[in-house]
Image (cartoon, rainbow, N blue to C red; front, side, top):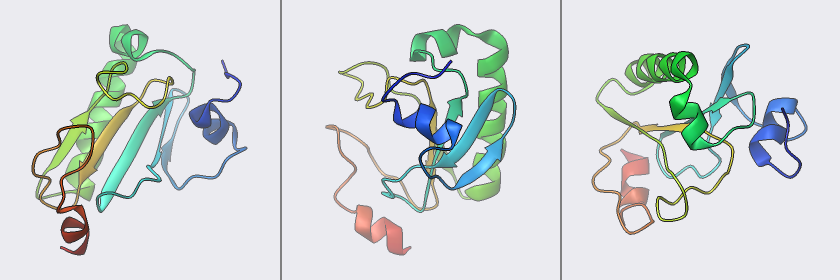
Length: 125
């Protein structure tokens, strides 16, 4: 299912560009365009759904989590973070369900709705 005006649906359908790391029948993995960290990937189900539905879909969430762990180990051998934002207070910026992987540098704390002040320093490490 594709939803009108959903950036992730546009990327999945090929109408918006993205640098893909993986595509299969259930989900895609592509670079986040924010580029706050050396590695910043999004794991996105192909079907538009809420975060709650994704986390309640046992087969899908298992596949996403296993793949996130594998790609995290491969792309960020010194450590990484896998996370998922829920709702406004959780800073969810896209209604389309997704997981995120951050890594490639010491992450530090991520609080107050913005990356730590040393992000540019992290990008150079």
